[in-house]
Length: 179
Image: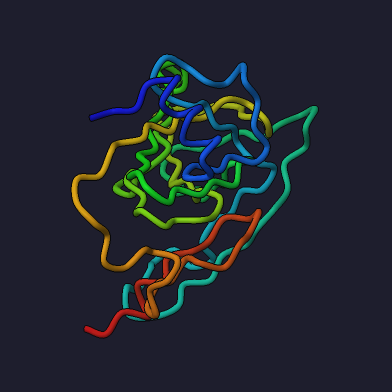
């Protein structure tokens, strides 16, 4: 079951959903709009290795000039909003207006976990050059009700790789997996 606007508000009041900063005008019928943060990042190496730490270069976009995204480059972005979800499963989806510009905001990581407490790192790719700006609407969070009890919340997992609060994009931590 997807939460409606009234249910999202009720969960915010209960403290089960946290959105900072919160703007009532961003609450839709069954979602909450999130915005592109001011930082983007790209990987340093052309060839990425899943077994090693692939380092990124983080840069700040100009609010006035924005930044032109190029096809064939994976950009890591970040949401302006810090979120917490303590009783629902959050899903991050792109907005149709963003998709119609040829912008994909995530390759595979659209689902959060109950207990995820952070900004969202975006895996941005484009089909043609597109100028983007910090603060522009970039996606929407949809909350799904959970059936049953949660044994281990994400923010309490010993091996959770994305728990450190940040306002910058975070590179892949695949290299920390034991495989």
